[in-house]
Image (cartoon, rainbow, N blue to C red; front, side, top):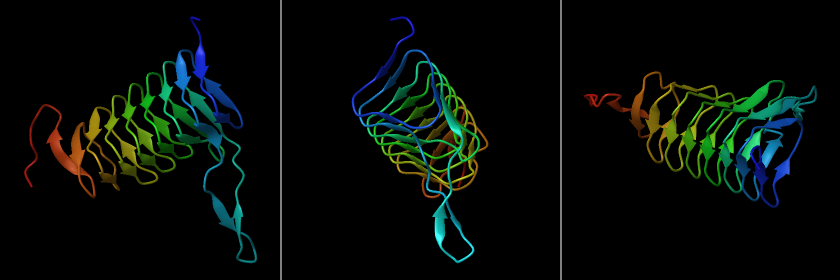
Length: 173
């Protein structure tokens, strides 16, 4: 039992996926689904682009029920060691979630998002595509991240803005 991976019922794993030791994947999770990627053909029709990338899940990861993690078009989607993902979370293709981060229920993380280590996303946080979030960031419930969050601290609102810098210094409005 030292190197167990617990995969509950009705979990779907598509395409190549590496899953680390001591990982739990709860019921209904979908790992490696193809993302929402459409390109226009020569006649103006939208055609789905095939995803050739893979999923890399680290050690001691928790993936909640009914969460989805998309595999990349050509690159990896990476969930690093110690990440905890709550129920009903969506992680878009080619995103990277840093070590020991907590992603709370209802979060939507678009494609190619990079989240640093020790980040906490509150309930129902939305993160736009191509965003970078520094390590040691807390994003409050319901916030919408539309710009990079470059400095450790607490961010809130729509759009998300710095409320409290790491170390306790409140930002003046």
